[in-house]
Image (cartoon, rainbow, N blue to C red; front, side, top):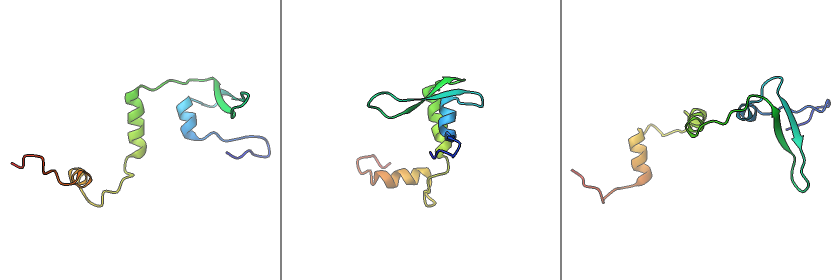
Length: 90
């Protein structure tokens, strides 16, 4: 992050969303001896997402970012796994 001439910084959206920081939220930078400064939410609406919600949010962020080169999902997994000679080929 770059500090402006007025001493301001922009907190990235992903971090604001993760911490529940909204306009009017209070945050502070905390410096502990021998450690780097950290950002702490003093008051706001932070909620801890469930594991399912975390996975859903991740899936939304990465949707459409993988180019399978025209392969179907099944073809891709076959390509990744390689030949499966140990399976019954009925």
